[in-house]
Length: 438
Image (cartoon, rainbow, N blue to C red):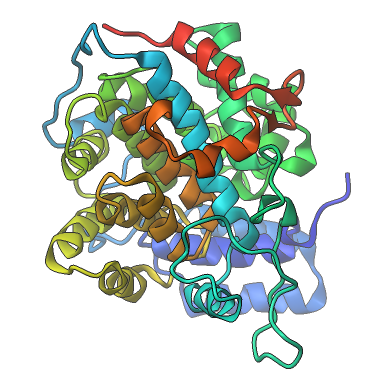
């Protein structure tokens, strides 16, 4: 098997140093010097030994957060919240789930061309193409003129204005389809091992990234969850589990605790701590859209399913506070960047904060929500997809603006085995049949 450069020990040990520090571990200078020396000589055996030493470190006693991985411990560490409520009998569940699928696609397509672009670069691009305020998909262009100090090219022209005729294949959509396939095969009682088997049976290895690819390799080697999330996986708090959250919320309307539990089983295949919590949070938030008309209350319900004293919960509580304090979302963005900008552009914490920012400032307006979220930058397609999914679930398909969803012509392309071309309406029908209403 040929490994990408970022999968090799020379690279992942650097990511592991960063991850261990973020988890509250102190890495002594002598260990860093030993790693640098082994890198300089290409001594991979020494690097693997040093990687093992990093894995054995424990957070310092002064580390102010409590971040368990066991579900029972997570539940013991969470604040009070509404765990379960039946939804009203007159709710058109198909319409809400259909809206969630379409909303996820629209937000993903909006952010896909500028994935991982810095916020200011996105604004510069839109200024150059006279597309501010943004009220449609990104205009198609070749990027900036020659000689521009920052050269960026749109990542995906089939998701730009005037060029969309279906929802292009993207991992943000693949994982929602994949989760649906797991539920159809194994039911609501699906185990982490079954969900993991579904992953390696239905998605090609080279179409999953960072934490998922490391977990995929581990699963193939017979390393089962939760160990599959830990072995040689420095990306275990990245955004990958977060983008897999939605299906578990779709099938548990009004049941945030159940949504979080299903999300936990999925997330523990590849993620730990805040990477794990982010999937639980968004699944619970989606389920909570049936329990309240106020988005900040739905966010608070989502927070009630993860440890109260974890880094993710702190970041999201801060985002709620800033969103109440500042009338302009860009002020809140500056605070998020100030406190959480040190994380990778594909980390769960900073990206989750941008999604919550978009949801609050979007004021339950679909277009405003996905545009605000995507303009924040970082992992823009993931964030736009999650924000669009939540608002689509909240509003329902019938209430979504035609210009954002009709362009897909009810067609989603996917890399998931036996699901290469899907109808959004059919996906919503199948999901609705699996949804538990009491």
